[in-house]
Amino acid sequence: MSDEVLIGEADGEVEIVINWPDQRSAVNGAVSQDITDAFEVLDSKADPRCAILAGKGTVLSAGTEWKIEVSA
Image (cartoon, rainbow, N blue to C red):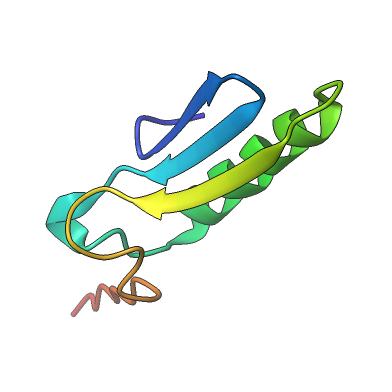
């Protein structure tokens, strides 16, 4: 898992944070995979009370990152 998705746990609560504030926590392929991996970790826990999905910064997520490189 990359530094763009963080997992924290306390008292049966799991927090999954998209840690990409300079991109308004946009979701690209790597972030999407990291979120999937985080929920798989959550699923393996014995008895989580809840899961919180959050974005670092001012938004949960601005949407999908669409960067297209064009070569000449």
